Image (cartoon, rainbow, N blue to C red; front, side, top):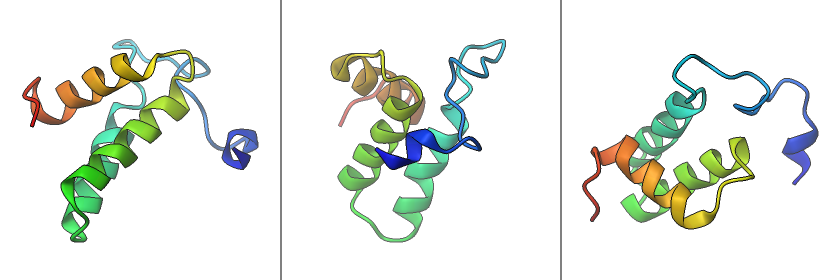
Amino acid sequence: MAGRDRPFLTRCADAPTTAGHCCRPAVQRTYRELCERGQPERFAFEAAVTVYLWHHPEVAAPQALDTVSQWLWNGVSH
C-alpha cells in the first residue's frame, strides 16, 4: 500500500498515546463521516476497520473487527 510510505502518516506503534489507542479518533471519524455522506453502514464499518489495520498491521482481522466494533457501538454488534 503506497500510503504506508508517507512520512506524515503515523501508526500507533510509532506514536503511542497513554491510552494506547492513538488511532481511535481516526477510526471513529472515518465511520461517522462516511455514514453522514450516505454510505451504507457496512461500507463505513469496513473502512473504519481498514484504518485500524493500517495503524495496527500486527493485529489479526478478527481482533480488529472486535476492537472497532467496541469503539463504534460500545460492544454492540449488528
